[in-house]
Image (tube, rainbow, N blue to C red; front, side):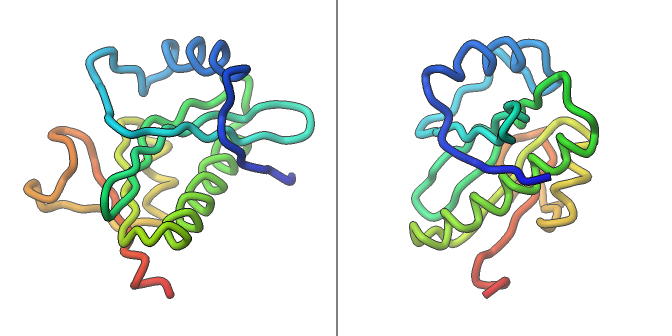
Length: 140
């Protein structure tokens, strides 16, 4: 299964909004500053969206929004491609770390294959959300 990742466009907004509101990641009180959204897709369908916040020295992946019609394999594969894409973008933009924050057990399990869970409460990005991190220097 070949999956591509591209920036989400205004044409994606309807699907993103509908899927996000009905996903376990939905939190109407959660606001980020400088974000962009990526879309994972195959030739025949959109597999999901990932919201990424760009910070001065890091990028933070939040809010995986899968297509509700996905199989577990399709959602896991889309997550993997998002993680790989953001690591590449991190290297090209000079970011030092990539973080993932999630509240969905399955997505957190996928993240744990690529990132290390941060257990120090002072280093977590958001109280109550599991946080995973990856120093790009460690994988060169």
